Image 1: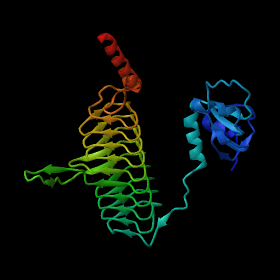
Image 2: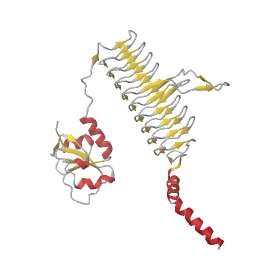
Image 3: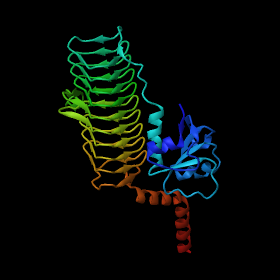
Image 4: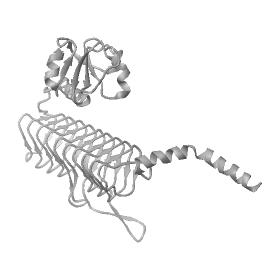
Length: 341
């Protein structure tokens, strides 16, 4: 399918700068752009590629000012990154060929399935489960008793939803995710053994949440572990019992969040972050990769980095001192020798 620059600009509410009739049939990276493809420039680090790319159309921010001649046609928009994400969605509309109930699946008689639901081979749907209309449950999934997968949600192969798990509307649960397993709760005994604390709660995933492959989210000891609407969770993330993740918060891969921690709205948590239990993280907080969070962050919009984590600006300054630490020690020794003469 081909689209002209004029058509694309209408979709993005953008302004064409160049040939409005030039057409593209595919998307590509700016550094690998070829004739007939469209790309975008959002990261300033890639600016030099805009002068050499052979892409026919380039989506840029409104305030972009070229310093050289550009061969392609520009489409100026308010936010190039967001606009290109919208275009990717248009080019890769979810195929609708998956429909119907496989004869090789198991569906309990008490389960309720909405219209146009897809259930793949070797998937098991338990007692009193509710599957909303247009939901897609791929092969080899287990949807345990009293769970819900609401309208338009996708559950990819090999996902396990323990009992009473609630998945909202238009969520995406990638392969291998386990939601609702027991939280890690053990009470120490006088004989140095541990007694398991029964986990009686569940997990609630609100609307428009995406959960990456092989992530695990534990059910609450009491009440619910809650992932609020719009949150995006990467692959290989561990979320413990009674954790609460705020709206539109992003969590990158290999992060671990301990029990009963509450994370606010619109936070950005980078990869391999560790957060201990029973903390509160304010709204709009940014936490750098491999940080260790051992106390609550109450200041909205704060940025933290390091282990143990501290204000990101302070941590970067301290890193400069640490990098020069050997030279500083040598200077101190020299000064001590000089003072003894």
